[in-house]
Length: 103
Image (cartoon, rainbow, N blue to C red; front, side):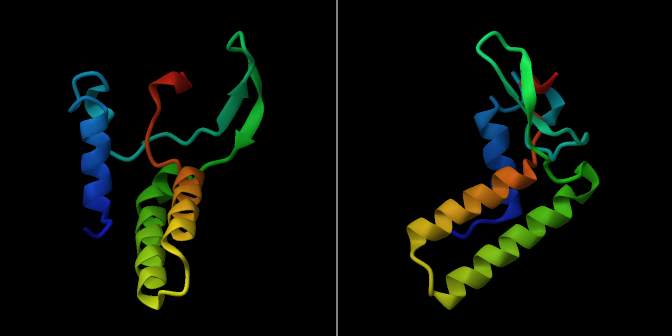
């Protein structure tokens, strides 16, 4: 089954409880840009760990990610496990979805 933006959005919608727990954001790309911050054991912010993609550029970045994956799969030069890890790392760098714990 090929990875597509539609499948990623649908998976996010399903994981988030079909929108019931997550509200209207389930299955939609983030609308706000915020860096991911690390926290300590008491929940205090301990610093910025990752500057993610700008919300306005998220759909474009996700399209580029899917194109990259398709290109690498066609080339067949990279082991599937390595390709999966690189896809996840790139997806996390984009951080396409809003997280309720970010407020």
